[in-house]
Length: 192
Image (cartoon, one colour):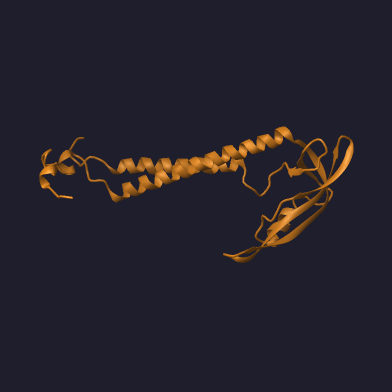
């Protein structure tokens, strides 16, 4: 490959940015622009996740039946996971034994909030939300109610929470993009 300076001079010498009336772009402007693009991209991904979670929630509520179940018992349990990378990790979960009526027949089932807690204290605090004898909202799969899910707020991702996070990231990204545009301004005494 040849480095022929005649090719670069075909269009004539280029005027520096200061003669054209623009300040050279600041490094901060490029950083804000990149940060803004990253935040808006993450917001778009979270928006898609929120739509997916909303569709799953709608599907469950449209095909399953919601009712209140009586808590017959509650148990905080320990779950040990083995991983080649992290070794042995211990998580804690909460399991409720619930009783509810399906077609005038009383059913009993277990409602498990899985190993979602990193400490036993968190699991026990969650377990006190619905003590024995209280009512807990559930969804059951018709016709016999063999499958049961929580209809309340579980310690999992929700569509609304994900949508709020996406909105916050989008606004932060938009502000970063707008502030990156403000970094390139005309030099004093010169017009664009």
